[in-house]
Length: 315
Image 1 (cartoon, rainbow, N blue to C red):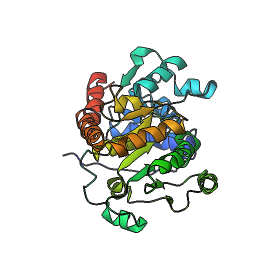
Image 2: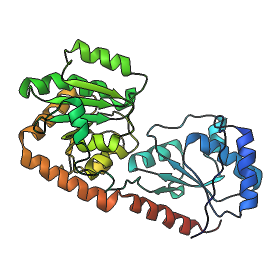
Image 3: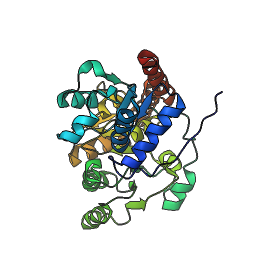
């Protein structure tokens, strides 16, 4: 196997000329065949570096499900220097098309996860930490506490769930600018004792294993790798029809329950359906894991990118 090296750069914004010059120098001395950029900042810096070095085999992966801004700078980022755009979902492909990227310059390569990373039984200590017994339904969300993740709608669904299943418990894992606002909303709904906010955690795999049901409440989502993690861990999932999420769950209703975005009542009904029907929950969990293993594994993502590299050749 060839030796791999890495070099850190400051990346002081997407038009950081210092980093662009450093990348251009690395391109010139490295005899590289492809330049693959994976974020908006990397895209700006990488495109400038390609222009400075005369490099033409540039690939950009886009993960977020909103249209890029118009303007002269983005005309450079999305211009002829980029040979291929990689969309991680059909939803993002449609956004790129609507922005004006030619269809022949877009490839679809879904993000992927390691389907065996989350170990069964690893979540027992977290349930003990919350004081949740093995038979108590634990329903959770793991994501940044930002508007587009929609945790407020999950919180607003909780009173309806508790009215039918008073023993149910909830957890929201993550940090972000809406943390205090969400906590205030939860307190206003009288959810003390039923809902725990953990803040930022590094043991998310163990927390995922601890859950009985995973809820993804986003109203915008490029694809949703945390949903893949939940399915890979054989967790029944309730998720919104936002962005690329339906591409993971499937519209056939076999691998999870899809609900409209920003609809707390629909979230509550779906969670109650899973709590009240163990056979359905087990069936969803099994089908969900099967979908991830077959279509959304890290191996499938790697093979998709390698196939693209081969298609584009050495530039």
